[in-house]
Every structure is written in C-alpha cells, then in structure tokens.
Image (cartoon, rainbow, N blue to C red):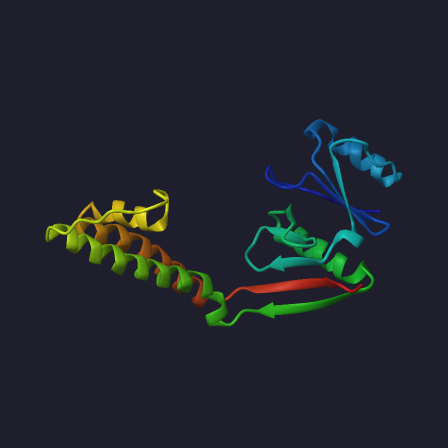
Length: 202
C-alpha cells in the first residue's frame, strides 16, 4: 500500500494505491491520521472512500501547470486528483508510471496551432455572428423590419435581440468577447501545454 497525504486545504486528503486500485479519501481532518494507520494495515474504510480499479481507466494525465492529476475513464468521464504541491504531484505520477503494469508512457507537447485551436474557433464564430448582427442592426437603423419566424429561442432570435441594441453597442460587446478570445489565443500559443500521459494497454 502506497499512501500520499494532501498538505493543503483544496487537496485530496489521502490518495493511496494498492493491488491495481487507486483510493481517494477525504475524511475529517481529525480522522486523517487514523485512516492512514488503518490503510497501512490494509484496512480500507467503508465510507468516504472512492476506489478506482485500473480496469476502469483509459489514461492518466499530468499537465504542466495544472494542480491536479487527471484520470480518464471510458467516454468523456474523468476524475481529478487535486494536489497543489508540485513535488507530491510529480511523485504520485512517477509512481503510477513505474508501478502500473500494462501501460505505456508518452509526453504530448502541443503545437502552437493545436494549443490555440479553441480560442481560434471562438474568434471565428464571434466574428461571423458579429458581422451578421451588425448587418441586421444597420438595417434596423435604416428603417428595415425583421421578424423571427418559428423558435423564439433560436440563434436568429438572439441575434435580432442583440441587433436592436444598436451598432455602437454591438461593436463594444463583441469587441470585449473577441478581446478575451484573442488574449486566450496569445497565451495558449505562447506557452503550448505539455501533457504527460500513462495510457492503459488492454
């Protein structure tokens, strides 16, 4: 049984590994030492404990700069092991890497384009909606009338509602959102993320 104890408030209180199972426990502060002593004697608590058999896992990720280890299951299901201390976080990941059999390790360094993909898509969508809204707003200001037929909660109805705010306000609103997306793009492409992965081999 290998045991790690969280040192900060937002950490998992206890993370343990034994017999191809990862255990996560967050007991009361007053109970932590007692739980750890029981674990050392292979006594697993019956409550407040989450057990994750390796057979359920698909991958384990350690992303540079993130204060957690991410466990990926089938589909989109995932779990975070919150560990603020970099040294402990790396120690846990290295232990998993060395002791989980039937797994392969890889380091995935994102290219600048891949790192900035999401904010780039966001900027493209924002620009498209902004041009559409601005066109309708100009029409309204020139006396044209627009009406949404059908679903009043559709994208078209939202665009029409925003267009009624006027061209100046539209530029201001979309300018703010575009600026946020652009800032995110610059940050992500300037420091592309590096993700260490332990991939289960079935």
